Image 1 (cartoon, one colour):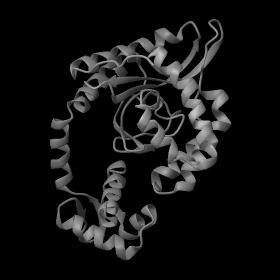
Image 2 (cartoon, one colour):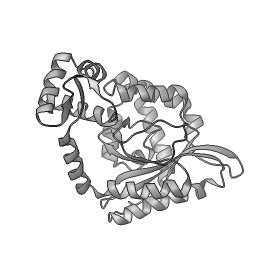
Image 3 (cartoon, helix red, strand yellow):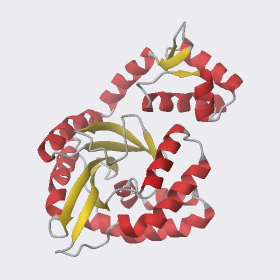
Image 4 (spheres, helix red, strand yellow):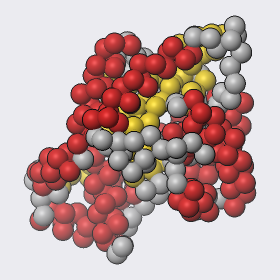
Length: 293
């Protein structure tokens, strides 16, 4: 991919994740680590194509009408997105929990919808936002990723973290596949939240991605639950279930946030609503659940 095309895509991703904001050329240049001269050329081409709109007086940029047309066409080409939004409204209402829908795009998790009342305890997610596919985020995507793709993804990680990530996915990924869903205990710590927010503002910062992964392994004993003691109470931060496409790949992931305190005995019951919604969506798109290991 040419550098200019890559930068144009980065602008689209950034503006989509920050759809309620307007940004000057210098703000976009700083956020995406692109020189002002190069950013000007990219924005000029995108403006001429209708993909961004420049305010004549304030000199700020927002998404243009061509993006809306592309989004409408994409919804038709990927029916699971609209189906997931509809099901998520019902799921959030039935459980009383905030619900997110995500898809995997390259090495990032893309938020496609957020429904329900926010609790104020989780990450402030919005449609269009990207989160790096790094533990603890995207457990179902990693657990059911085809082995060859998983090896390629691990190979792109920092050298000193590859073995730790591979070992984690091998052990915890098997548990996720056996359960049919993932469980996150509590919520990532304050520093983890801060790093994730910084990365959403500076998505090209490889050092931030490495720091985020290092932070996870520092918190892992408090987050990833391998086995529940039936009568022990746990604060459950999230439960996520996969929706499968006709090829048996994860088409999208539904996640309930901030479940609250549950005993190990109660966790499966807390997971049933999101599992049922994911199974319904799998059926609606003629998907199939892949065979176990």
